[in-house]
Image (cartoon, rainbow, N blue to C red; front, side, top):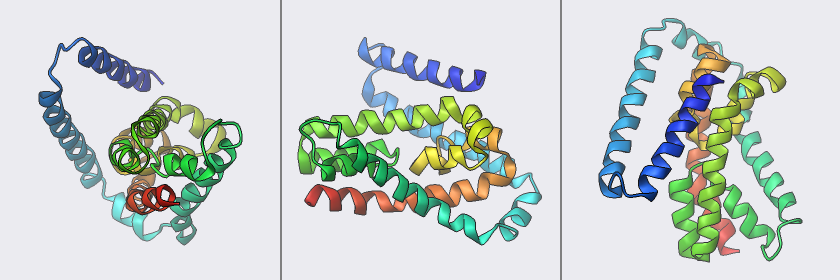
Amino acid sequence: MKGSLIIVGFFILGCLSGLFNIVPGEECSDISFYALCALMFCVGLSIGNDSQTIKNFRSLNPRLVMLPIMTIVGTLAGTALASIVVPNRSIAECMAVGSGFGYYSLSSIFITEYKGAELGTIALLSNIMREIITLVAAPVLVKIFGNLAPISSGGATTMDTTLPIITRYSGQEFVVISIFHGFVVDFSVPFLVTFFCSI
């Protein structure tokens, strides 16, 4: 939990730095890309040093292949239900926002182009919140719902930004399913977002 709070603290520090122009935004996008690359290198290094990873992949339960599909179905069902209490937004618009699955950079751009800046901003904030909730709540999710819960909660982010937290709290044996889950959900984002935006 302490590690998650530190990550969120750095996120808030970044927001404040951007708000007060302490660090120019153009430079920061390059820095964040290289930081993500370094993070992925470290995750890859830890996976490569673990001889059990390939064995875990071979012994993976075939039913776990359904996890990304259930994440997609569950998210879309949740956003469809949320549209009941969200005024002035159609079911399709709410499902378009949910179809970002935490991939805020891509989904918010698509939604802004199709539906305007207001819904694009809502998509950006809701998908950032999905990632932050996964980062902060991963230990609680594992404790209450089991090791797969933070993977499903992380959506498209489980093969990059939330992978270290998932690895830490769910265990090294869930790295392969987490990467597979993130890849499948990530791949679905442009198709689902544009589909729901065009309805």
